[in-house]
Image 1 (cartoon, helix red, strand yellow):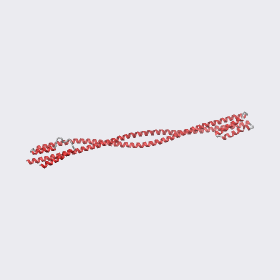
Image 2: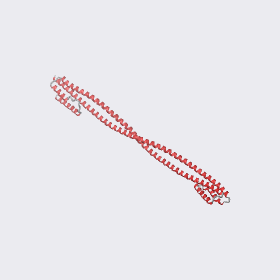
Image 3: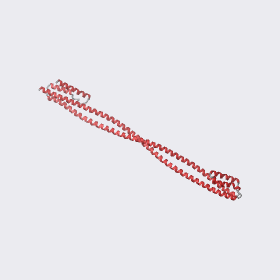
Image 4: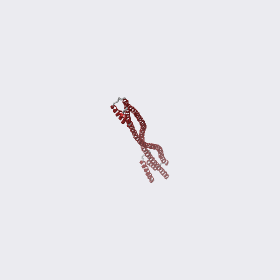
Length: 350
C-alpha cells in the first residue's frame, strides 16, 4: 500500500512540475494532491467505496468540464490564428504583387526616359543645325539683295550715261558739242563698261565716240554713233533684265530652301515639345511608382512581421494546449490508479 501511494505521489509531483512549466489559470480550484490525501484518508477510515468513487468522479467531471472549456477556447484561438495568418499572408502576397508590378513599371519607365532624353538631345542638336542654316540663308539672301541693289544702280547709271551720250551725239551732229563734253562722256561710258563688265559691248561705241571729232562727215558719224549707242542701250537693258531674272530665280530658290528649313524647324519644335511632355510624364510615373513601391515594401515588411508574430503566438497556443491537455490526461491516469487502489483495498477489507 505504501509503495503504491509513493508511486502516485511521484506521478503527481511530475504532473505538478509540468503545470508549473506552463502556468495556466486552469485547475485553480482542484488539487490532485488533495484528492490523493482525501482518498487515502477515506481508505484508512474504511469509507464506502461509492463515497471514494464519488470523490473521484467529481474530480474527473471537473477535469472533463475544464478540458471541454479549454477545447472551446483553443478552437476559437485556432480559428482566430488561421484567420489572422490567412489575412497577413494575403496582405504579404498583395504587397509582393504590387511591388513586382511597380518595379516592372519603374524599370520600363526608366528605360523609356533614357531613350526619350537621348532622342530629345538629338532633336535639339538637329534643331540647332536647322536654325543655323536658316540664319545662313538669311545672311546670304541679305548679301545677294545688297549685291542686286548695287548692280541695279550700276545698270541704271550705265543707261543714263548711254542716254546722255545719245544726247551728245545729237549735239555733235549739229556741231554744238565741245571736246571736253566728248572726253567727259567717254570717261562715263568707260566707267559704265567696267562696272557692268560689258567691255566688249562698249568697245565699238567708245571707239566711235573717240573718233567722231576727226570725222569729215560729222553728221554721218553722229548718226552711226547713235545707232551704236542704241544697240548698246538695248544690250545693257537685256543684261539688266537677265540680271533681274537671275536675281528673281535666286530669290525663289532661297525662299524655297528657307521654307523647307522652316517647315523642318516647325516639325522639330513640335517633336521637341512632345518629347519634353513625354519625359515629364515618365518622370511623373517614376515618382508615383517609386512611392507605390516604397509603400508596398513597407506593407510587405509590416505584414510579414505580424505574420511571424501571429505564427509564434499560435504556436504558443498549440504548445499550451498540448501541455495542459497532457497534464489533465495524467491527472485522469492518477485518478484511475486511485480508483483501482480503492477497489483493491475495499476487496481486502471484505
